[in-house]
Image 1 (spheres, rainbow, N blue to C red):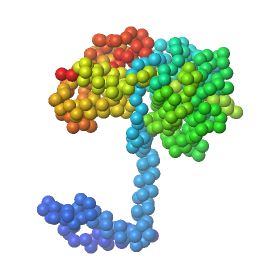
Image 2: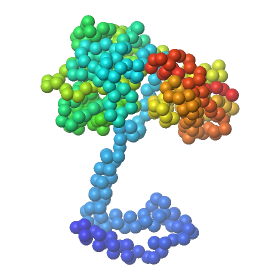
Image 3: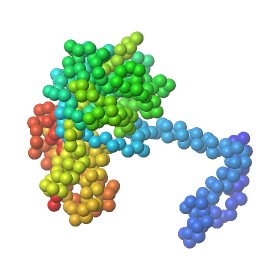
Amino acid sequence: MEKIVVVLAFIFLCQLPAEAQVLDPKEKAKRAAEDRVNGRVDQGINKGLDKIEEGIGGLFKKKDKQKKKEGNEQEMGPRNAQTAGFSDFIPGNNTIFADDFSQDELMDFPAKWNSTGSGRVVELDGVPGRWLEIKHNTYVNPVMDGTLPENCTIEFDLFLKEEGERRIPQLFFGLTEVRDIVREDIYYKEKFYTKIDGYNAANSKAVEYGINFPPLGNKNDFPLTRYSNRVLRVSIACNKTRIRVYLDQTKIVDLPRIVTPNMRNNVYFQNGELVPASEVGMYIGNIRIASGDVDARSLLVKQLMDDGKAVTNDILFDVGRDVIKPASFDILKQIGDALVANPSLKIKIIGHTDSDGGDADNLKLSQDRAASVKLYITENFPVVGSRMQTDGMGEGKPVAANDSPAGKAKNRRVEFLRL
């Protein structure tokens, strides 16, 4: 059958008039009004081939579609798989707790955490940063001075590790009324959880959520298996009784009346209990818990317009680079919208870094990040570049000590000045 199709296609092409192969610009313009899309002759050829395909059952078309589908599945990575959706997650503006485990010794349990079992700080081959490895049937939670505020955000990375045939864990995270997980049994206490299971098996992948068992619901259409041996960013927003959970910018949970005051006592993570036991650890990193008492979007623009100056820690970049993270886009939209709404407004964008790295490198990095913010605004809003100046201060003007992850997070900021 394929040979017949090729022969028919060849005969069809050979019978095309010579002018169908080479046209001067005037003739192309004339044909533009007649052709189906852009008036190109090759589309006329395709149209003829479509008729041949229809006559023999559409063999080419089916195969092309199948190849295209398979190619898309292979090319779609964990980050671009979700770009079609819009995330309304906005990080809190005041950091309460932050830890990237850079202050802890490798192979030790981190100083700012509590645990019911076994865990340690590790580095993973080919993966940036440090990670807390949580062993089977173990709960961990951060040690914080107080409870979570009514409006707060929780962000962290999960590395979904896979090691051949070794049994992977069930991953739990959420809110709990237990302040001290060593002295209280978290299992029987009030909590909200999200569970990730089967990230290495397409037929059993599951994201579930609830307050106890059985779960309240699940999100089985999230492309969980694409994150095997990759980093998955988790974001949680709590607004009084409401909770929203996002996986890599995709909202999977939105429950308006689920959070109780008791649940805001702490955050927890669990490598779940399985029989037989999981052989691979749970890995978490880059944790940030922040107050969301004030809407970061309205506050930033209000400060810029009223005070002539606004500062934010919520424009985030890849580590050591000037690449803006998607979680920053909504904040940048507020600045872009403000510039569009106020044609006479001119601003100066100033980047700041923490003290990691050399002075000269940090100065250039801060300048490059400010330039990236300007570029993003000019590319996404009808705002000319001449209305924005950029500069960078490197690590030269810290607002907090650089001796902790929380202090470093405060120093990594972008400043806007009204000119």
